[in-house]
Structure formats: C-alpha cells, structure tokens
Image (cartoon, rainbow, N blue to C red; front, side, top):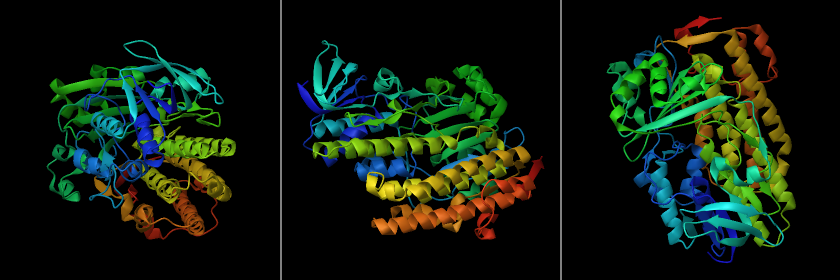
Length: 538
C-alpha cells in the first residue's frame, strides 16, 4: 500500500466497487484504495442476496457507471415485478390473482448474479488503475478529518497502515464506522428473511398448463420477473440468475411467522409446504442442487448519520437497511454513492462541505424513513389482494413521480435545487404516510380473496407515462419543478380516488387524505379492482 490515498473504501462488495468506479469516472486523478475481505473471483450465484434491481439502481449501473454492455450480455433483463395473491391452499398458481406486466417495461431493470457482477466490477476497477487489496480487512480506523484518517489493514502478510483524506465505510452490516461512532438507530420493523439458491431454473411458467393463464404472458417468460408469492404476513421471492441458478427467499413478519419456523433449510421447506405447497413441490425436485442457505433476523436498522464534513461516509448497508420488498437496497447504494461522490468532488475543489454534508445527510435519511414506511406495519396487508394491489400501484406511482425522477434528473446532488422544493417534499412525505395508514385501515375493514384474474399497474395510462418519463432528457430547474408539482397533484388525486374506493367498504375510511379536490378518472383504477371476482370478509 501507498503511504497516503485520497480515498480508502472499506469493503469491496457492490457498494464499495460501485463507488470506486464512480470516483474513477468523475475524478480519475484521485488515488483510491479498496479493501475487501474476500479473495476474488467470488463464486457465482451462492454469494449474496440483492439480485433484483429496479429503475434507480438499473439506471445507476447502466448509465452512470457505464455498465450497460455487461448487464445486457452477462445478466438477465427483468420482466418487472410480479405478484400472486392467495387462492385456496396455494396449490394451483392459475387460480391466484396475478399482478404483473405481460411485456418488458419501457424503462429497463435487471436480475443480477451478484458474484458475476462484483467479479466484473472488481476486474474493471483494477484495469482502470484503482488499487484493490482483496483477502484483506480494515481492522481499525482512527478518524481525523484534519490531518487525515489512519487506516490499519489486516492482510496475510501483516497489518500495514496508511492515511487518507476520505474514508468510506462500505463494509456492509459489519458497519465499521457505524459501530465505532455508535451511530446505530433501532427501528420497529420486526421482519426476518431467509434465502437460498438452487442450481437450476425454477420457471414459474411451468407450474400450470392452463391455456388462459399461459396466454396472459404470451412470451412464456414470467420467470424473468421478480416473482412474489404473497400471503398474510409474508412473501416469497423467486429470482433467476444469469449463471442458471434460481434465488428463493422467504420474508416474514415475526409476529405472524416466527423466525424459528424458517431458520434452516428443512424448516423453510416445511414452512413452504404449509403456506406455498406448489413452490415446495418445485423446490423438493431440486434439493440435490441446493447451493447455500442464509438468513437475517430483524434485518431492518437505521442510523443517525451517513455523511460527515469530517470526510467520512457510509455507503449501502454500512449505514442502514429497510426491507427487500421492491428491491431498494441497490437504489440506496446508487443514491448514497452519488451523494458521496459529490461531497468528495466539492471537497477536492476547495469548497467548504459543511452545509452540503448536512443537507445530503438529512435528505438521505428522510428518504430512508419514507421507504421504511412502505413496509413497517404493512406485512399483514400482503395477503389482501385488493388492498395490496392498491398499495403496489400507489407505491410505484410515488417512486416514479418523485423519488426516481429526482435521481434520473441528477438533482439529489444539488442542495440548491433540493432546498427550492423543500415545501413540496414535506407535503409529499405527509401524503405518503397518510396513504400507508389508509391501506392498513382498509385491510382491517375487509380482506379480499381474489379469484383467477390479472392486472397490470402500467395498464393505467398515467402510471405508464410516469415510468416512461424517467427516460426523458434532462429538464432545466424550472421545468423539473413544474413536472414535480404536476406529478404531486396527480398523486393527490390518485390518493383521493383510492380513498373513495376504500370508503365504499367502510365510510370511516374517508378521513385519511383530504377528500376535497379532483379524483383521477374512474376508469383509471377499474383495471386494478379485483373485488368483483373475489370473496370478501369483513
């Protein structure tokens, strides 16, 4: 190692390798050291969870990091998010109400074999001149924003130390700096996850020969979706990997499905036989191809600070984690690394970064809190076909209309612009929170068990437009403010429309969001109404 670096990144997983790549692209003269405990190449498939990307992460990987060629040639295009709601004993997928697209979306996303992706990133970074010490670990950090942080690295040959102007913790859940500075912040979201990989394709398209069911996705490529098998208090994922394996996971609320019922492969398989028997049958056919089994108990956690003017930062899970539903982990890597890169560039340009660091920190943590509200207390909803369909439509609308739009337009990095839309963002957070409360109350008022049928969120014109507009050319500040205001007004109307639908079940539900103002066209949610084919229990 050299005696001094501009930046040391502790951790060469997805967060650290992406940040190193971004720093090289935006500031190629910086000296960067990445310290990673694993020796490479890492194994494919049986490696890490977090294989499904959505729009922010896909845009970050493909366009901002310039990795589109690899994603197209070595990973899998993703056929959106797909949900199957409960029907009977869940032994026949053709009887389950399906929410998902028949064709690939206009704004792409990808299924990632993490081992393959991180091996490629590490090699690319080395070829770019970034120094990488794998088979090594940062054993200690003495923080000193003025003189330079002292970083000690444990290697097979000893424990050399170096100094750096910036230290970025990308060590994952180990949270080197988070633990050192006691920055951890507990959250109330008590949900657990286990997952495993099978060395074979488990194609959900093969689970039924029903011609009507097969005709809904004429390409026969449902398996390229992130498939969610939904039930009260849980969801099960199936994600295909480019290496030929399939990732499966169970994510469940502790109060409804205790961790002790899923925390080994044998227990997880027994749980599947009870709750998702058709999936269990498919897994049993391939138990000889089991590649791994991993799990986290109470995986969600928060943090007090992620960026500091003292020239340290936390990236990815070294900071905080919400929930794997909607696959936001890689989104937060992209968001966080964009902030970190901006701070480092401003610092090396001689700017006082005190205000930007505080502004970015507050914005990142507010977004974390908004995402956490998507999940906290919401797992009981997951078996309710009507309420969960409304939730998926609402959550996607918010994501495309505000959160993802700001990232695609690269404005999170502008404290001046973000300050100019602060009143709008506060109203957005309040509306978002009220809608999540409405969804919980709606679920408590009536559970809808839908029969065979299908819906697609982007069949709704304005939702399809919001998703497609993410790829629009960059707007000037005034144009983007106007777009955000228009989108927010659309969200208000959408919220009122769902509230009106809920109030038809229970008039008391007409109190969560302001009822005065326009609704979206009644036809807008007609395709997302599942109760006409449903058994409803109050």
